Image (cartoon, rainbow, N blue to C red; front, side, top):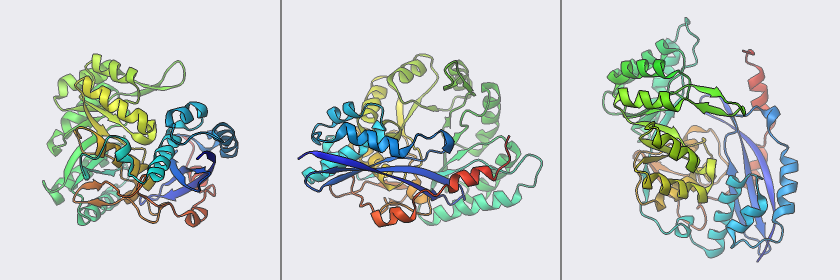
Length: 381
């Protein structure tokens, strides 16, 4: 059996918040008619004008992998080089699981759990400072009520720059839900200098959150890469006395943040790193004595299923996980979305990743430039 090629599908799906997210789905085909699926999730961090041509990427990927052995995942990834290796890593694991007729977690050493504790994201308040935020507070509270009725009793709250609006939401949240719905974390997303972050996190302790994330200011480094103030994060951790987490997607980052005393919890995501690297990073974090949680790039069901298989295979799951796409998005790419029950993500069964892609529906959700038009409807700042 040989890999005969691949096909890219560029899709866009609206969230329940109204925002539109773009994804690239990859199908890897074989001479025996078996295919595997991967996903490049939610490209909202990059302006559409800066996204490489999918036609060129698809052509190059086909050139590099045609004739490759699907049983040699590392070799195939080496041939692909920097052509979407994370998405192909998912597709190749899905493909091999289907060839062998086993779930991906079997390829990773076996399943240790059927469900993974989960939390739902509530995004930053978007009301501008000085404007009436009561309507948005009500909308966000209704969103929490909806997920509570679905059996989800844990959230993570992104904190935006309008702290009056954020405070109003948190006050209403605790008034309406008491201790029934937990706040796993407050995610500052690198919006604040560490002194500002420390002050607001100390003030917000009255809302009983369990952890804080990305608590130091992001800035553009010498190579135009986004960086954070590790020393400032360490100071927040020292003074706050509440666990601090950060997105750490390399061994170097794990070592740097650990040595600086900047984090308690490493946030690692499968769609950001691929299945192979993600498992390795979880193992490295455990060796360093760090707790871990599985983060998210707001995946569709392919990426969420991959995350579930990785977490099912880990020795321990220290913190509730973040992948929420199948609940967050108004549409999906599969006939059988990943499921959530009782504040947990359910590990899919069946060969490969355990989800069946609906290729006909991919035509309906194909990217039509709606995300770009939505971005252009906002004022330039």
